[in-house]
Image (cartoon, rainbow, N blue to C red):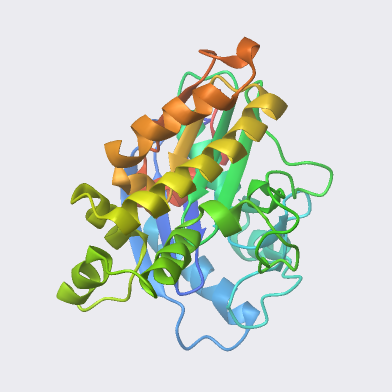
Length: 319
């Protein structure tokens, strides 16, 4: 991470999820010097969740002066006002004025962003996007999340909702999405889409996928499809081939819209490594218009499970 200012103070990054809270204290050089994690089970009100976060922040600070607290939250977030509008299974987690409540309790400035935006900013500042001028971060997991950095600034939009690339429509006659529309990108290219596509084909065709999942006593998921692909399973080959086509179509829209020099891919699907990236790069390069070819790199994310913490803390970084 680049320098946090001023140098004699510290920042805390908080990664809030539907089932856990993680917090870490960062020094001016961006190194984690103390961290804590706890479950959110048992909380009954939004105020109780906030008080747990405040207590964690005070504990990880260990008496040090905190310059600021960055917080990554799932769901729709109004970052300008620091209000989480909705989108998690936490109790009463609707229109929660996180910034105001936490600044009152902590006596320091608090910045709140959507978790995908935090991940994008973390990768840009100190991960796989470091050194890029314009970067788009896309996470392929249960759904598709994204964050966009243009000319060195995190793109938020008028109401902080920019970057919902998973809900760009690829096919208006496509499957129904959880958002209520049809044919959103995530219905074709997410980890959930990979699983559903495999299950449909396995209704009428034998496949190693079920055997691989059964061996570990797990429900079929995208990781099992990729493992079957390593073994040249025909169903897996068809599913992943189709998925890469749709992933590339979405990335082409991203490239034509934002002209990034780097696209960082995160999420569980990205862990497939070369099984995914070589084909995805090739297909995306084929589909973009000629002037865009060889103007961008597609790379795996670099920060792993700490991306939310790093990104939240990096909201206070000096570029």
